[in-house]
Image 1: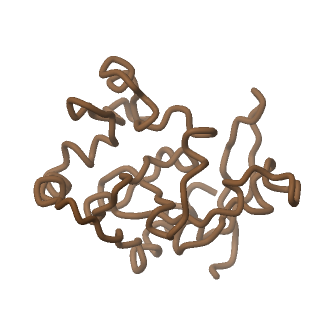
Image 2: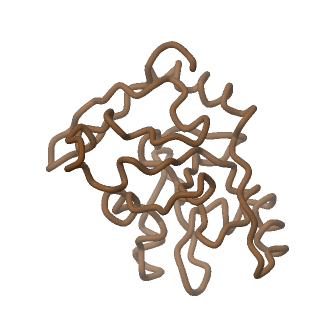
Length: 177
């Protein structure tokens, strides 16, 4: 546990809210939203995604059936020059959050036109069209990720979490506070 918090701005029912998450959000597999996200403070009546574990991952180190998603919590954050990606599958949980709450996730865009419309805060492409689906730009276009995509096999393995890279994420989080 790292002391401090990271302020995350969320839009819930059309209203923007700032929520204080732990400073080390996403650094390990944990149900980070449980009891913190406003929709996840309803006990047993909370959406099922609230209790699911997730972490931030390097998209170029992943070999998953379901590719990681570009974060909506820290949209300006980067890790080794790439957008910040999260994964539930890395933590052994199913992702119920992305389809329901991260509507601008690349994987939720069903056409090439919709895929190409999404931009990162700096104005560059957030997503890239593979010819059949929309994924995070880095997964499709970044040279390090292309090697992973090209060498992918039908037998998928687990992704590597950020682990030691959590310090870089925490440094960024500190600048965002």
